[in-house]
Amino acid sequence: MGKTKLFEKTPNWMDQAACKGMNPELFFPKGAIPNKVKEVCGSCCVKSQCLEHSLKNNEIDGVWGGEGKDARRKIKRIRWNFTYGQIIKCRICESDFKTISPHHKICSEPCRQLAKSKRL
Ligand code: SF4
Ligand SMILES: [Zn+2]
Image (cartoon, rainbow, N blue to C red; front, top):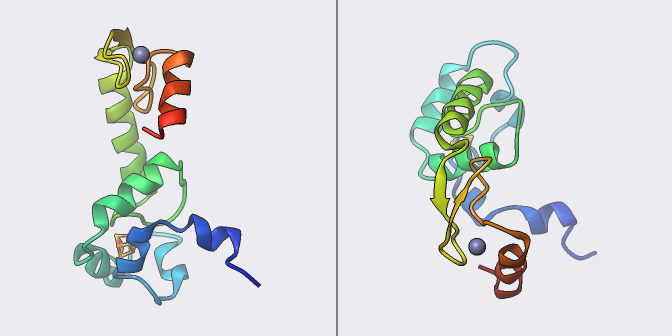
């Protein structure tokens, strides 16, 4: 058997995760974040990648980048309020446009196609 789909999708930074090999259940606590998890995440060199990954992929549960569900929801809200309706430069054609989400950085369908074809 070749690599599974899940394995292929695993981002590289996960190789350096301080929690690698630990029981994943620890990172999905029912209540408060356990001290052990705080410690491990606090010392993790890919903490910010972990947090960004969860925000980008809309991970709801668990501890990511040392932050629990509520803290991550708050970060999302702050970013959303900050970005919504702002005029930003399209990262392809550099024209100004009104963005509608934190991940909306390309102005139009033609620019999106161009980004896709050039893998930008
Ligand atoms: S920040 Fe925490 S959950 Fe994320 S990879 Fe590092 S140790 Fe694991
Ligand atoms: Zn554009």
